[in-house]
Length: 346
Image 1: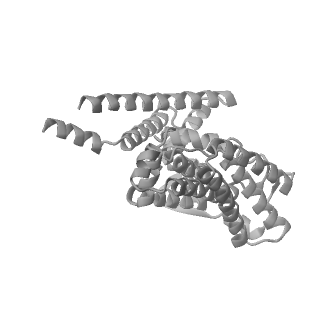
Image 2: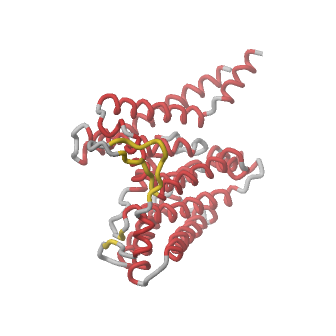
Image 3: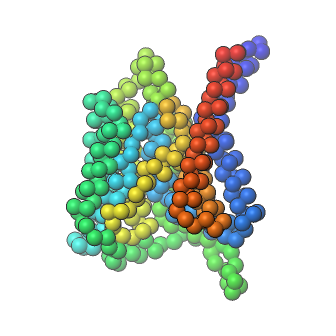
């Protein structure tokens, strides 16, 4: 009876839920600590919404990265895809008098094309995902320069109007120094990012496809024995990741309003870091999209804390992120090791 109860407890508190809880607790403590110690902008709701506004594209691309990592793969091409989408949409809108709808189709088309090619190479030709996505990253960066070499701001009136659109958050505003009430707001990209997070959360938690992602990442042989099409599952993970990179590219473009070959440099590394901080294991089989969201928020918050503390030099941010990443990797390793010992003792 005691043995059955122990097994029930370990089953209920899964690796995914445990790491998710740790991520959320760390973020909440970090943000509350920043508000109490540093004060200033951290005490205003708009500061939190600004984190979402600045990182909506990263949230979307990190969700795609988490899907691939859950299946045991990786995709480092997403930063290049974001830059390529931004440049292609910018050129289309300004140089070809394009429409908003047409630019959205371009973004989706680029993401879909990348997903099909990389998915086939990884899943059906069994080429290492790191090598495939590395080639994809170089190709995207090169194509971005070919499309247009010089960076420029988009002047298309309809796009500029869409870029400047703000969605007010009722009851979350604040009073400025002049005594005027300033409403809190989020950009359109934040709404898109939240919808994607919720959809992927439902897919991973309550659908057969979501269970297949975890099964393939946990153990391919066991997944095959369960009747799961491993190749198709891996293909779909890369396809969805690239499509999300296309969507994230357009959200990024909507935020910055320009095209440049240097856009989204290092975004793939930030996406990997956010996924790991959010509880997604590099070995596959463990991860949660809500955790990825909090991973992005944690990453951005620590950057803001470092900046607010007066350490404006770029290397301080890099050192802090590296320390935070190592901390979460250590936590993951300790938790997994302890759970394995506990399960053996049951």
